[in-house]
Image 1: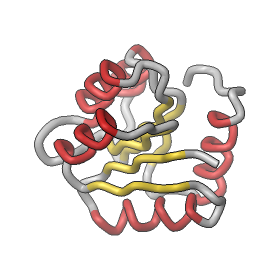
Image 2: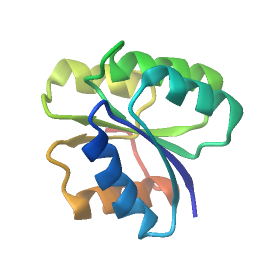
Image 3: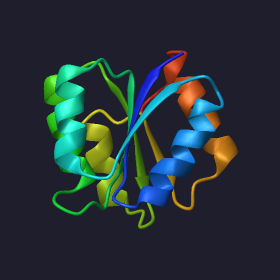
Length: 124
């Protein structure tokens, strides 16, 4: 299974995603602070990052950019409660594999994670 990082400024959201993916056999590391998540990515192997776009200190797009600099082959799914074409386009340009709208649909999340980890993901 995969090493997955989840970053959302809402603790309940990280807990929910963590429970869903842990039940699928993945090792899930949850964070509510950008700096801690970035430090973790720089020092631990991560196969997939699931990042909220709206965070406290910086945007999830900026976090994605920094994570991709540290680990270029890491996969990513962006989460947002406020979907726009602009943020989707920017996420794709930075290498996000998928984009999920909150509230998170359990089946959609499981399917997208499985697709990415099986190497069948196309860009958004």
